[in-house]
Structure formats: C-alpha cells, structure tokens
Amino acid sequence: MPLTPEQSSEFAPGDLVWDTAACRAGEVMDHRWSRYQLRPLGGGTEWYARGEDLVSHAGPGPQCGECRHIRTSYHNARRAGDTEGAARWITEMGVHLRAAHA
Ligand SMILES: [Zn+2]
Image (cartoon, rainbow, N blue to C red; front, side):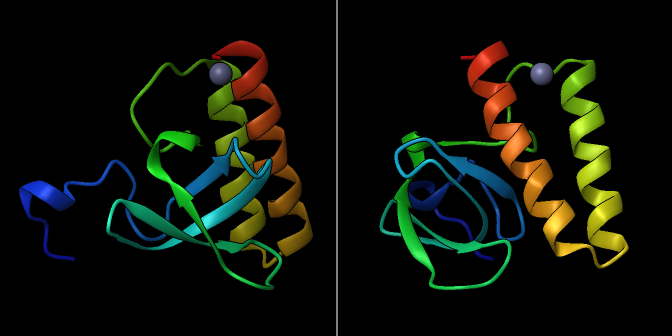
C-alpha cells in the first residue's frame, strides 16, 4: 500500500482493531480519506471508522503480558480456522484495552 504523508496510517490492512465508537472488533481492510474500512471478524457488512476511535494491540501503545496473551491466542485461533474463537479474543482485547490501557 503506497503511503503519502497525508495517508500515513497507524493501522495497516490485516490489523485487528477495536472500534471504540461502534464497540465492535474488526479487521482493517482499507484506509483512505482518514477513514478505515473495517470488516467484522465473523463476516458481515463492512463499516467505516475514524482512526482516532480505533485501538489495536498491533499498533503503538502500551502492552502488557495480558496483551501478548490475547494476541497470541487470537493468532492461534486464526491459524486453526476458529473464527468464533478469534472474534472472542478480539472482543477480549477491546475489553482489556479499555480496562487496563484506557
Ligand atoms: Zn494489556
């Protein structure tokens, strides 16, 4: 993905994020015009979010042992094809981020 100064994005396609405005977890599909296109992990209708509303373990910011545990569990679930498990972990991530790193 080409990056210009105006488009320098905090999140890249494939990143998992928690949309604090929508209270939903999603996977970044695209980023343009300062908005992110997100896809629900379990499939469904994509939606758009503002960058300032998104948080992610993959992005910059504080991380702790719980962050790493959730992230590892998520990736394990994805690798195993466990979409429900992956969605559950990213929800856990959102809850944890708000509780521990907000
Ligand atoms: Zn943490």
